Image 1 (tube, helix red, strand yellow):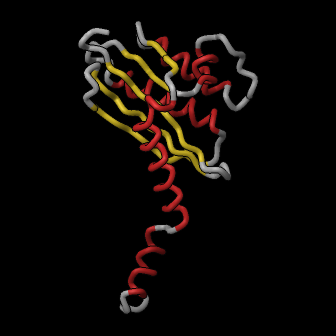
Image 2 (spheres, helix red, strand yellow):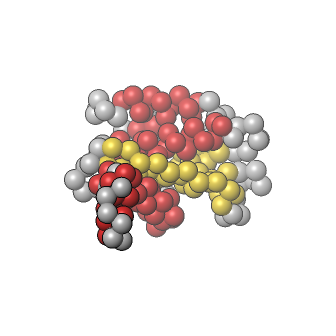
Image 3 (cartoon, helix red, strand yellow):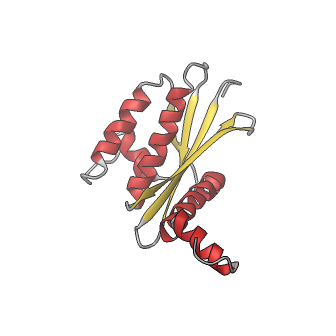
Length: 161
């Protein structure tokens, strides 16, 4: 890998009830310096759907940064996503098909880009950021901002706002 290589660590986190997901991407230089990060909360989907969404987020981020010449390597711990995008596994789930098509299309827009499977241990930071995005999103759904403020004001003895 040369100096201009950018490593996009992509991961997803799904709550056990399938209500919510968090996805994240950590962008690192070849030397390991964190250059960028992105995460978001998504509602109800399977783990494989969320893993695709994380890779798509990484690809979209890489496309936005494509003005800066760099080799792009996307790393994920999802063997399903890597296998399907590389054509080794069939895409049988109709919910994965549009995500697969989007990922393949975006990957084609990045000449020389690669999608690589890594062990989960090498993807811990993206995993933690994805879990944080999921938890933050779930907390917002449980406690909408106005509701939280009203409860806080009563707890302080200020009465209803």
